Image: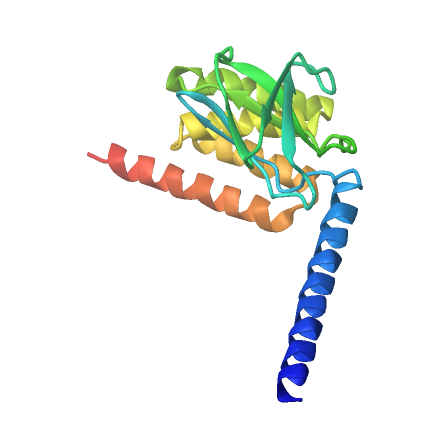
Length: 200
């Protein structure tokens, strides 16, 4: 009798494990039957090797495609990755790049992520040129492109008070007063340091 109970309990245990496994498989299968969501948290960093593009993982995605080009929404290059980051190399210095990411699996591919705009350059001598271009685009109301050029000017010339001042003005136009205040403060700090260094 005891042996019969043990056999029955073992059978129940096996059925429970099988049931749990099949539920898990159904859940996984259901996830992969859907087209993945749009990638978020896209970040683009510049260094001498190129652009490091990274993003948050997307549930159900088995691969990601990274697109880039010199015109908004017009992508001339594409690379795939199974990780959540990718280096874009052999880019033209001084150019404005538009970057977007999609997620995909065997069911299909997501829409493009929010486009990121960045100026690829690591030459400090180009900071003034990027500042002038950023100011020009701000006057035309092209805020995203202006932001990319002003960021490049600051990245390449960290002690450029005018670049921080211009980006502060852009933040004001974008209704981001806290960020504007920080940039104006940084511009004042740089100017004070320069005045002190010029004292006899």
